[in-house]
Length: 460
Image (tube, rainbow, N blue to C red; front, side, top):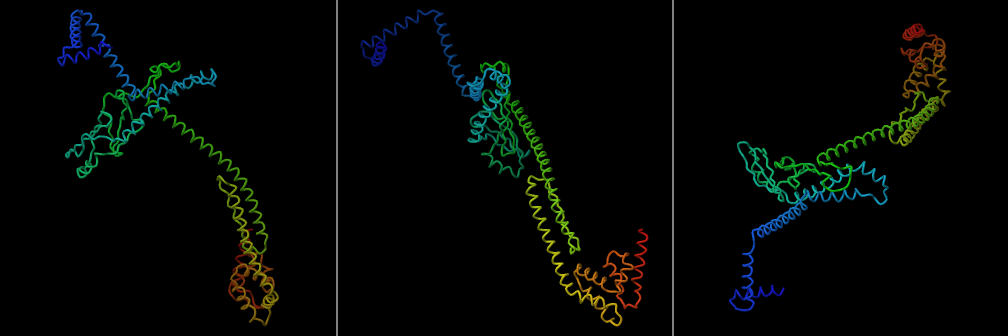
């Protein structure tokens, strides 16, 4: 160490022209080195050259290794190795037999899955980097004759160039060029490759419309050979994971799983429909029984001359038949109450008329008496015909036929040929000339009666 210090100080003195002991030492050492160089043989020079070349080679290799480790390929491989080594280990609470079975049956799937995950993770990083920095347009030249732009651009952090033609009408070309220097771009998750050790998108889309394929000839697929990782697993010897193939397999598996889930959902829907059908059938039977009971009560009411009934609307097969059933019962009850209310109103109206039965009977009985012609036909017809309510009209006709001697006599004799008393009454008074007891039946009624008798005979 002291010798080195003397040389440094002596060199400074020597350069400054000072004749000191230090300067003398430098001169002496320099002379000795020159003598030693003269004594070297060719073998000494060859050995020194070899050592220098070795050092340079080792330095270059270290630099290449560092560059590889920091490259896309190096980072992905490092992450794959770390993740799969962890998966490949025997778990603390895993039995040996289970561990061996896992390696045997799941190794390929696990290795492929880990490769895909790490590649996708790196692709996401590259996409974020691309979207953050955009693209650098290098050339945008328009050819007016072909009405197309020759476009080339680079991704700022890479050296590879994308180039393509974009057809743009000449009227729009100037505006297109002005706006194109900072275009939006898109890249997918699966359109990638290696160029050397770097990931590149094989397709870049500009403005969601213009597609630029990667023209680099030295493209290679994204693949990883398990043998290169130096991990012990006998079930993966010689196995190579191809990212594109793995993606297709994954997409196929996803499609198959989706189809499986859809089939399962369809089967479950059919089963629910079947169960709903059984449930709704049970509820429809209950609904039918309840509605039939309502209708029986309505039809048994003598004042329900229109034979009104509740219409049964079956419950459709849906998720909640119980709610549908409850609603249907409520609707049936409401309709039953409404019809019952109408019938009760008819009943009250009729009873109000029948309270005057003595007067009505008197009118009808005297209709056929001699000397009372002014009372009978006109009053009887106006009394019945001015009644607009069908149910009242039918009731009054029934009273008329039963209490009027002339009408009753003819009904007893020929009523069998008519549909009902109303049909008989309308036919009997059809010529509007109901007479006295000694007056013969009107000709129009006779014609109707004759046709009725003929129809009855033909039917029999």
